[in-house]
Length: 615
Image 1 (cartoon, one colour):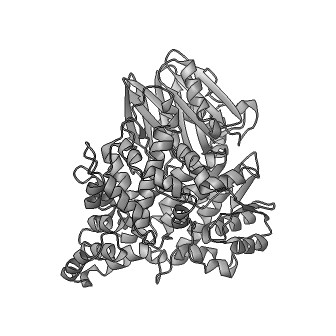
Image 2 (cartoon, helix red, strand yellow):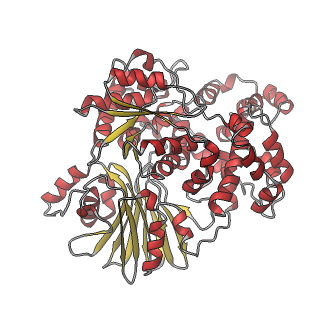
């Protein structure tokens, strides 16, 4: 796990500055490679091959290829054997060297062989082209800018601040999407100059121009792939691939631990780790100020598997951490769990460098409560009298749960529209009011928000799987994984996610809804797979997730900062918001879920504007 950066011209001083801005991602080593045509920078967090043979930028034998790499290719040993059989020799034992020679042998097709989380760039000195690639599900970040025929790339946006050429003008459409979804889906970030390389894509830059190529995707026409397998067959196949996935993620030259909340996902990871590790597993639970105390459940699992358990306690104030959290995020993100994740990483780093976590389980196995009110009304939409719902909804508040539910059911003939009426943080008419002081039209041009969700939701096939796929392709990479990477790497902690092996994703998208959500019970398939492998009281638990006491924070330790961020001066400095509309968001009743989301979405954007964009 590391930080990478570079650009397609020669400037040793600049690449050093960009690399230095990423030092938190790689505190163990640094390296640069500069020629007349390219500058590459690397910060190293030593996980595999701790020797100098793992130093980057790394070259092949004849120094025609140079690589900088962030992440892990877990099956590198298997690929290495294949390459050795073809006559390749290796200087060290890192996965980076395997990536380099795999690219030399197979070109872009090497990506089809990799199982892992990665973002890397390879410069070809003979062809004078740059190849950059990102893993299939977007676990590792990779940003780029194209300015005047020059390509810049980096693991984090803050590296571009060092270039002096990044225009921090906001992208109106992306800002609007942020206030719709609480994150920004797609390749465009809220900063006009900066884009993301999408998950499952690679780019080739040559002669001042770039071309994008998709190398992996999940077929949206999955209804034709769903077979009539028995539930037991799916459970067996799931268990087989998951064991493989956990085993691959235990490969490391430094100790590996696991987060343990006592919930289904983390408990199952610990169960499989204990089964295959051959030694005592280290587990970590973290108590958060004002959060729900789940230490009892974690203790049950730790005792059951006889783990080396470390119950850690966070004492830090949320208010104190907001500036650092926003700086490390790079992008505005309305996910209050960023703060607990940051605090957890800070205390975990004192004990371990590599940690396994459960991201990706809910989006593939139907773990969130929101899927029930979205899925079951859709199944019975023909029985809902739409005219009655339409007549009731105008009498309800646009921020009330009842209004959103009515709007959802009244529009179910168009699932994408229904989804947006239920799930949008600010409805389109609310965004127009919020942005009304701006000289720029920030509200989505045309149907950009609709076009994000329609390809997934409007069509034939298993509707629950369409909802899950929408989250897997949008919410997961652009919110949950962004948060997980940036908050752990702020302290040089590598988080590995066994539920996000691409082979597991390819299996689970084919599993019928009835095996995921059964009689209103979430994660049915996972519970079946866990039966007999974890304590009974854990198997029957409902999903909890982070408890983040935003309402209490706003009345207490975040009150002064809230007043500052929502001041007229602060709001007007953005050039976006109507002051009076923003004050209504601030003063709304935060016990209402939609009002709470609206407040935190605006609060997070204003904090990001202050502590990242204008810093």
